[in-house]
Image 1 (cartoon, one colour):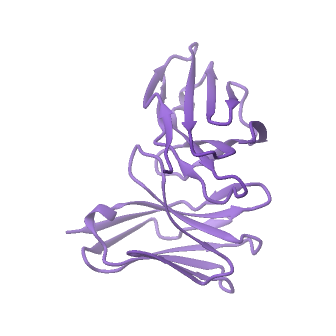
Image 2 (cartoon, rainbow over the protein chains, first blue to last red; image 1 turned 30 degrees about the vertical axis):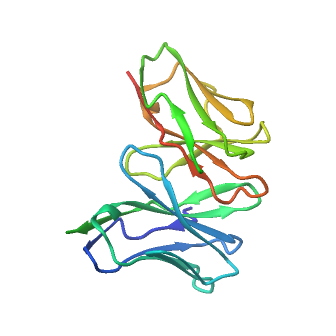
Length: 112
Length: 113
C-alpha cells in the first residue's frame, strides 16, 4: 500500500515557465513533508519542507503548498531552468519512527 | 554545512567477497540511516541508528551488517552478496531533536558480479 504517491512519472516544461509537481498521501498522521531533488548516480538533495501547521512555504524559486483536507501537496518551481532537470521525490515524515516515506518520483525535464 | 560523505564512490565485488561501505558526517547529527536505491525507484530504508544504537532494521538480510562505531561514523559490512544487491547505497543523517529532515550523502554505486 503506497502511502505517498506521485502520479505523474514525468513532466516536461519550457525554460522560464512554471513547473508544478504533485504529491498525494493517505495517512492523515503525517505532519511533515519534504521535497528532494536527485540527479542520476547522486544522492537526493533536500530542497524544501513544510510542516502540517502551514499551507505554504517558499524558498527562492521553490514553493511548496499543502492542502491537508485533500491530503495533497505540490512543489512549484518558477521560473524553471534547465539545471532543474532531475527526478523529484516527495516524502512524508513519520515522526513516531523517524522514517521517511517516499513517493515514486517525477522526472522533470526543462527544455531550453 | 549539511555534508554527508560516503566512500567508496564505486565498488565492484564478487559474491564471495567481504567489503565495507563507509559514511561520515561532522554536523553533530545523532540519527544516521542506510538506504538502498534501485534505478528509477525511491530510496528504500534499510537501517536506522539513533544515538549510536540500532533502532530500526527493515528486515534486511544478514549479509548486510551495519555498524556505528561513533556518532560521526556509520559502516555497512557486506558479505556473500547476490547480483540483485547491486544498487546505489545511500547514507543519510538528521539533526538531534528531529528526525524529520534527512540529509543524504552522494551514495556508493555497488555492483555484485
